[in-house]
Length: 337
Image (cartoon, rainbow, N blue to C red; front, top):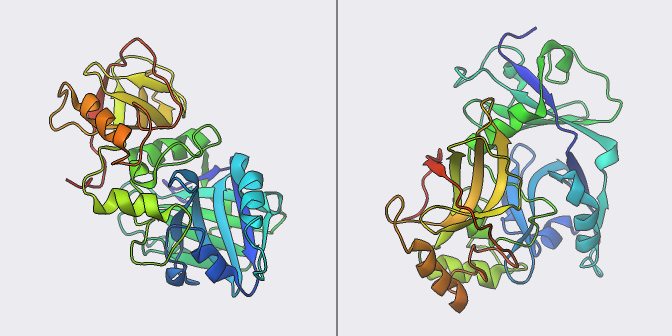
C-alpha cells in the first residue's frame, strides 16, 4: 500500500459524452471556456450558462478521443444537462448523452507533503495543472496541486492494471467527506440541482479559476458575463468561511452575517468538532465586518451592474433572521481588487 495516498469513491459524480464531427464548434457556442484549448493531455474547466449568465452546471472537460468529449459534473444534473444541450444540436453532427452509468469515478489524493509527487502511483499520474494521462480505458485528470488530487474515470467493469492508478486497491480508502473537505479548502465551486441557475459566473470565481475565455466567440450567457467583467469589480464573490459554533449548512442555504451581508452557500463540509467550513457567495467587504457592504451591493444588484438580482446575489432566494457567526478564511488564490 502506498503510504499517505488515498482513494475516494465519488459516486455523486456523473459523466456526459458529446461526440461527433462538430463537437468542438458546438461546445464552443455553449460553454464559457475556449474549446480550442482542450487537448488530449489537457482538461478544461468550463461553465454552462443560461441566457442571463447564470451557471447551469460546472463541467470538467476531457478529450477522450478525436471527436469525443467527456464532461464530469454532479450526477444529479447529468440527465437534465444532457437533455438541455441536445436541444441545441439542431443540424450539428453531435450527439450528447448521459453516460454516468458507464463510468465509475474515483478521487486520488496525494500526501499533503508531496508537492511534486514522484513515487508510485504518482509516477504514472499527470503532474501539470489540468493534465491528463491515460491507462488503457481509464483517464486520470489532475484537479488540484497541493495536496495533489486527481479524478480517475474508468469504464464500469474495467480490470485494474498493476503499477497504474487504476490499482486502487493499493491506496488507503477515504470517505467522500475527505475529498469535499479538500475541495472546500481549495476554493473549488460546485453547482448542484439546488443552486443551478442561481449564480453569475464571476460570483463563483470562474474567471479567477480559468473557466472563462474572454477572447473567444459568442456563447450562451456571454453578454452578461462580459458586462460584469468589463464594467469593473464584481461586488459579490464566493468566499471561504468557518462557523464559530457547530452548525449544519447545505448548498443553497441562505443566511446573513452579523455585519448585515447576506450569503448563499455553495458547498459545505462539517469538521470533527461540528463547526462547518463552507464556500458562500456574499458581498466583498472593504474591511472585515464593514457595515453597509451588502446594502451597497444590493443597489448594484438592482441596477444589474454585477449581474445579480437579489439581496444575496442569487435568484429568488431569501435569508434567515438569525445572524450566522463565522470567520472568513483565506482562499488559496487571490480575488480581483
